[in-house]
Length: 599
Image 1 (cartoon, rainbow, N blue to C red):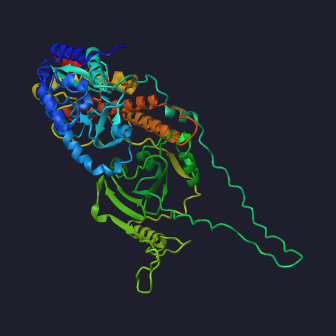
Image 2 (image 1 turned 45 degrees about the vertical axis):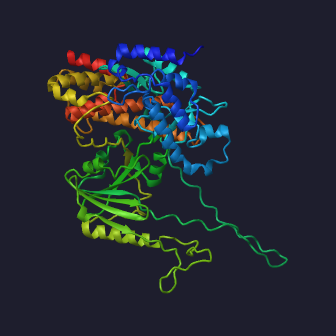
Image 3 (image 1 turned 90 degrees about the vertical axis):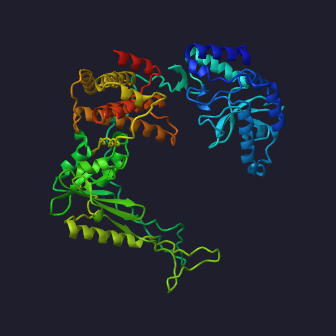
């Protein structure tokens, strides 16, 4: 296939801009003067590749202002003055690295060196400055004229384009066909060339990780085999003997100090319910059984919580195995402390933090921290460190480095018993079967309303909000939300379909905790989390994951779309509109929004 010349590609680009993006077309600069190009070559000590000269003789870059035509993430094409300024700047930056790159041969320097003398930055990057963009190799040789990418936070690398003419030809094709260019799609909007991310094709029926978990059997803890007592060797008849053992003593198990929450005045079953337990999985389990179940496919990366009574003052407690940590989340602590008090112990390194929450409000004055300093370092009688010949402080080997942690933890628990009536022994509840269940984690709190909405995906949403009557804006965003639900597939769930229909009719939609709609949203979030966990886990194994990256992507966009619905129901309309529009998959959403507003 013959690649267009630079002049032919520019003619196609100019035609498309003139027809669809007149503002951007008007920001193309006139041709550069040949004498200016020659002066730049002389100043930089290089000869510009032919493609670059031909492009500059067509347009000396662009005017940098709103509507400037760009090459997507690579930014606007540079003019002669821009190339000189950027190249000299990057040469100065790269001078400090010359000695480190001395071992590279010329071909390697073209690609891997920070900024070889013969390299020219020909675009201004996404920030319209010399921090990133496309470069050309001007050195004669096998890479002459080749196009590479440079980003200030990464190593330079060559692109698939052998020359600038190929870049311009692909750019022209992307404009004419509305096709992706370097991962983004060019569009015309209000006379300007803009770029947007095409959500692509979503798997319509992704494999359900929770469905796989439902088909799996929860493992059952088996009784450990009886220990075989070592039999000493019989003495030899001919005299003395010796027994030599190689190896080191077994490491002492760390003290059991799990994260735990104590809740006043509610039974263990209600505590699990507030955590978001799955009723069908509720049953007694020992600590070891809980750990085994939480690590099995049956759990699908969801936590398993175990709860019991502690103390005679009506306190219950819960611990967690597997899944993402729950007890430090504000939304979880708020649910647990509804109408009562929660005391939380969390282990952070070798420190234990105590947090007290009363009916959703944290009490900073009641917080405390137990700090256990290391005690395996050797000191002399006066407490000074004993140093070895290598300058390192001596350490005792084969001892607990943190002997104070167990004693300090015991003192902490004694203090909880005295202050709150909480009596709990972490070592004493391991074998006892306690009520436990899988947890379907509650949703994160929505962030507070952000700064006034301005723009989203190069669209002036702030102006739209200001000039549009609230009723019409809500109707248009409801239609956008319905399209988002359709393109992600969440409108196939009855709970979401009913909510969307009520929104369309401008009827109120409730979202009570643990209601059908809330549970559906939490389930979608759990599907996405489990899919990610399965893919991450497969990287350490020889067998492939039961789900694909496309399955994970589908669950992720469903979770994201459900989040947009939640924001529509709970946040002010401008903030919700920003989320809905930012998560649309179709790049034609602007045209659809215009139709929704007109209708």
